[in-house]
Every structure is written in structure tokens, then in C-alpha cells.
Image 1 (cartoon, rainbow, N blue to C red):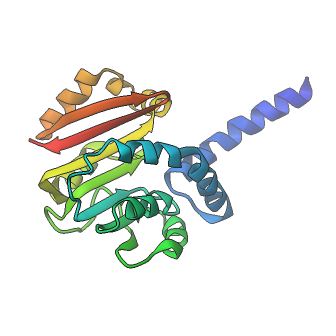
Image 2: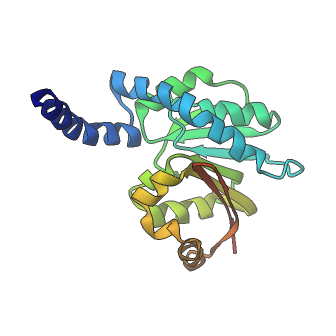
Length: 204
């Protein structure tokens, strides 16, 4: 019985640290967790990207919260003629992601709430398993709107369980739609695939 209590206490103590690592990976633990995320979430990336209109050309793509860059690498492979930029707030993540850099695929340390990127730069902005961690969701959306082209798409995808835990108000789609409307954005489409959910968002 005492061992179960000890294990429970360890989990309680470690959980906040792991949550921090999921938001901003650092050190050996951060690198280790990013490798796990690749296995767990890359299938979600593949499914999400498959839901895009592949007749549409995406000249410039921004991938937000890239971890060690696997999602950005997939985007570049899937859209070989696109320029893909992956950003993350974590220097540890970007150092790891930079090993995947190639012509047309680059990585930079940036905060989604203030990217300093040009106005109307991107045709497609993606964020996989990350938007529920953004410190100021409204400011992040406003920044993404600023750097998105007038006919561009923001593609968000995550686990439904993470959405309901971190952003419970958005369990009801009408709440999300109203929230986006207040920011002069609109929900183009929403889809579920088992435990995953994706949103396509555009400018009004």
C-alpha cells in the first residue's frame, strides 16, 4: 500500500513538470518527450493535411509549435513546391528541428503571440497539438490573422481530450464560432476522426 502512495505522490509532483515540458521542451527530458510526440501525433498531422484542398497552391506555409520539426518536414514533403517555416518558443526544440532543415524548409525560435513576420505572408498556417497551450489565445489568433493572406487558411488539430481539458468552452462549436467571429475570423470546417479534431479557419 505504501508503494502505491509513493507512486501517486511522485505522479502528482512530476505532472506539472511534464506539462511545462509539453509547452516548452528543454534539456534531455524535452528531447525525449518530442520523440514520443512524433510517434503519437504524426498520424494526426498526416490525417489533418489530407483534409486540405490539394488543388490549392500554398506558396508559403507556417507551422507553429513544431517541437523537433517532424510536422514541418511532413508539410515540406507533401507540398514540395512550398516554402515552409517552422517556429517554436523552445530553443531546445528549434535546435533539434534545425537538423531537418533543407532548401525551402527552415526553423526559427518565435512566439506565436508576436512573430515579427510580415503582414499577409502565409497561405497556410498549421498548428498541431499546441494551440491549447498558447498563453494568450486571443493575441495568438490576432497575430496569425495578421500574417495570414486574405484567402489563407489556419489549420488547427489536436486531441479532443486536450481541447476539452484546456479549452472547455470550445466543446460547443457555436462557442468557438462566436469567439472567432469577434476576432473577424470564421470557422470554415470542423472534422472529427476518433480522438482527433481539426478546425479550418479563415479571415472574414
